[in-house]
Amino acid sequence: MDAADPDLPDAAVEHISQMLTLAKSKHQEAMGLLGTPDPNALPRLREVLRLLEEVELLADDATSYVEADVMKAAIKDLHFQQAAVQVAIAQLENVKVQSPWATPWPWLTLIILALLIAQAVG
Image (cartoon, rainbow, N blue to C red; front, side, top):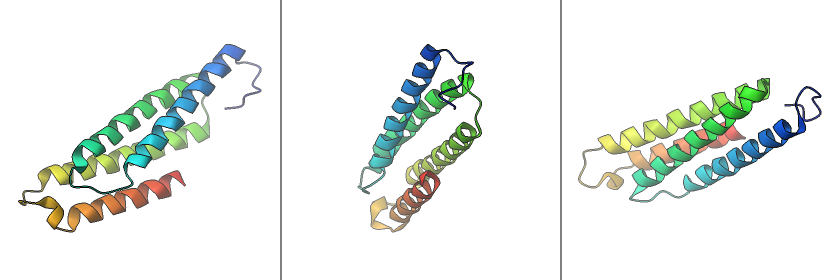
């Protein structure tokens, strides 16, 4: 988005800016929730997914005003992050062990997920 774009009214530029600021804040909150593994990761991962879905809605709305390659790339990265969180949730839901955290797989999944998301964001 070019903030100096003469075709966009000031109100639209302000609206886009607010949407992207809110999206960035929600994305940072979601990434912060990925930080520390715990025995009750499913609710936390579901919250991460919910926040990422809100980020997607905000980004899609901003893209409806401005078609920019950087926005398309950001949405593609966001879809990758959502898919990684969905995989982690599915894996944790499918573990049929008495204590799933006694095995290394959920921990490794969360670590790999955090590394993939950090790489996609960075």
